[in-house]
Length: 407
Image (cartoon, rainbow, N blue to C red):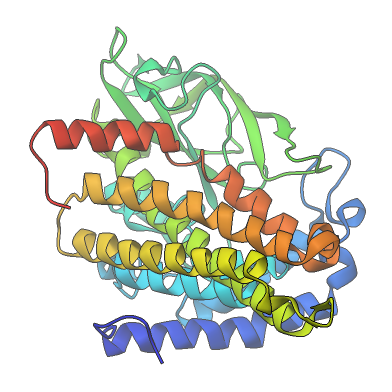
C-alpha cells in the first residue's frame, strides 16, 4: 500500500528498487563483516580525527561498485556521462536509503553521488579541460571532492566572504580560510568560492582546486557531539595558484553555482530527515507493540501512541512537500519558497520523530546499539546545514512579501 495518491513514474520506481537492492547486496554485507571497525570510533578514526585507511577503502569500494552498477551517477546529466535522472529520483532514492539502512549502515551514504562530494549537475559548469581532468575518475567513484563556501565570518551570509582570488597573469592566486567543509579531509578536489572583485557583496567566483595544491592545507578536523573524529574540517589557502581552466562557471558569477549546489543539498537533507524519521518511527511502533507495562503493551497507552501518530502526520506532510519541491525543480521552476519550506519543515519534524522514538524506547533509546542517537545527531546538524531554519524562514517571508502567495 502507499499513502501517495499519484504513483511515481515507473522508471523512478525501478531505480529506487535497484538502489535498495544494491544496498542490500553491497552495503549491508560490508557492515556485517566490518561492524567492529565501522562502529568503534577508536578504530574508525586516526589520531588526527580522519577516517582510517581501512574505512576509506570501504567507502571507495562502495562508490566504485555503485558506479559500476550504474547508480552512483544516477542524477548526473547525460552530457556528463550520468543517467540523467532529476531531483525527484534523487529525493526518492535517498529517502528510501535512509529509511531502509538507518544510521548504523552509514556506508550507504556513498551509494549515490552526493552533490558536494562527487559528480552532480554542479560539474556542468566546469570547463572542458576540467571535465577531461577530473570527470572520469569522479564518475567511476575513484575520487571525490568537497564544497568550500562557508568561512569563519561568513556562514548564512555568503556576501561576507573574505577569501580572495587575485589576478595573476592569466590565472589567479587564492588566499583565505574555509570552515565546515564536509568531506575535505579525504577529498581530491575542492570547489573554492572566492571574491574576485573589490567590496562587500561584489563578485564571487568559483574555482576547482586540487587539495594537493601548494598552499592548500587542512588546518584541523572539526569534531562534533563528542566524537573523536569527523568529516568536517577547517581549511586555509595561502597563495594557491589556479589557472583559467579551473574557473567554474562565469567569472564574478560564482554565487549562482553556490546557490545551485545548496538547492540540491536541500533536497538531499529533506530526504534524509524523512527517511531517518520513518526509520525511527517504525522501530518505535514495533517496540510499542511488544513492550509491556502494567499488564499490557505500551502501544495501548495514549502517552506512547499519540506522539507516534503525531510523527506519522508530520512525516507524511514532509514527504509530500519533498516530492512536490523535487518535481518543481525538474520542471525548471526555481521553487525558492517551496524548497525553503520543504527543507525547514522536514529537518525540524525529522528531529522530533527521532526524539519521540527515543522516548518510546525509554532508557534503551539512548544506547549505542539502538543507533537512535546517531540519527538525532545527524538531523540536529542539518537544521543548520545548507541554510539554517531561520534563514529559510526569512527567504519564505521575503517571497511572500514580494507577492509569491501560492501555497
